[in-house]
Image 1 (cartoon, rainbow, N blue to C red):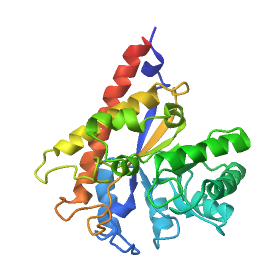
Image 2: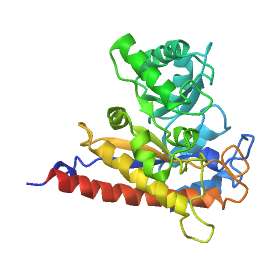
Image 3: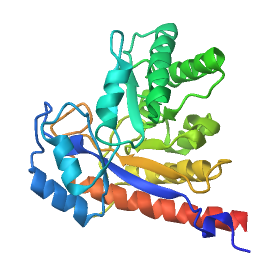
Length: 297
């Protein structure tokens, strides 16, 4: 008898490229390599989903429609913003999982809960699949703040909060050793398993973003450590109770080279490395799928 992982119910992985990898900084109206070259690159590497701010880039909606890309939106949300308006703008382009960066570094848990309730109420009304991201300079910038918001939301409405775990931020904040990534970061596996969206930016304990390759085709040692963690993340997600038939969106996340908040000047081209990263992520996923299939036989 074939296992669930060997049938049409096998989970799918969708790579969603965040266009900021290709945009100039500060954010401009078009990618530095031009829309045509970017489209050709995405096609060459079998990328069918993209992400960017719905209102930031001129011609973005038309470009997506022309090429038939799936779209996963993202937005910032703070006091005085209108969640329904922001989500409607995103859903007008596409309905993939949506990423929300909530509040600021000094937003209290009480304030963050109010904002979250506004966002999730609007999401439920509009049918939007919104995830609150663990991210620097937001109300969830530390694991403790994220956990506090998760618990507060659960207590307020008896529901689990959809979370996008961008693990690069807490890992560098905590200065973790590679051997401790999984033990210290995957602390709420049920929330990881419930997620439909994960940002996969390579990191180590001191840098939120590291070089994927050495510029000559070989992976950096730090990135190989990171890949071991990605394998653990996928194993955890696939072990969830409702995995069969689901789709997990991942963002092979690399910030642009001239945005020094993420890159170091010695990094090779992130515009090339993002596709190397994506290929490696899919290779890890395939191995994890096979391992999960063997466990269910």
